[in-house]
Image (cartoon, rainbow, N blue to C red; front, side, top):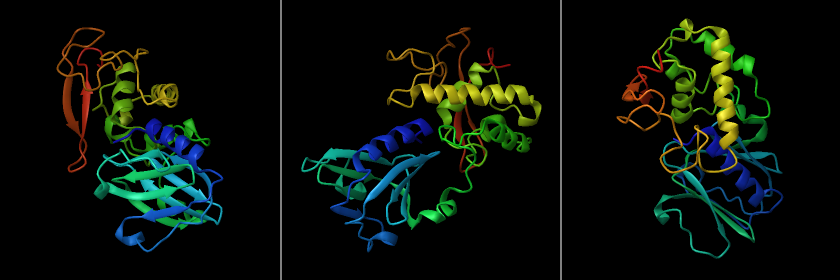
Length: 262
């Protein structure tokens, strides 16, 4: 599933393509919205909210989409062939005279009054990359989830929005915390430092598609332990461990170093 910085960058690019422009084509190829034609609608802005994307129009309505595991938006020059996938995977087409924005394998498409956006994203915690980011509130929500394992709590978008398995894994490694440690067993100051570090990692990566937590963008050197099992830890040489974390059927892959994360 794309991390919050990936969705943030996609929203920025979509905003530059659509903001202030009137659609000459607006198709939604999902059963519940198939009869809705957005042609003639003028885009006001495109923003991200955690891992959700919101297209706000000047008439006071919002189109919502979510990438989940396999969704994406691709921007093509008008008239050029689409290269994001097969035609049967297209779920939305938003076109201006210059650009064609094509959504592939999108999920949770919805069209609501902008004033009712909370019905779609109101359950989310503070957005790690949002303008209203609140570190204290994010830590407070995590602390209330004291019985949960920290690796699970960080992925719960109700606590804070935007973190995925990559930043969860790398942030816990850098903080020397095992992903299965209970939230209640972690001091508030340590939680604050952990969340702030993850946010700084995401800010450092949000303006480009490459995601590096080590400071290097060279192939094979971008991550400390994420997806590096069973290779040795870059710090201590211990074999990196991999497992599943969280309740079925929503368990997610997790990684840790048995020596560095004590």
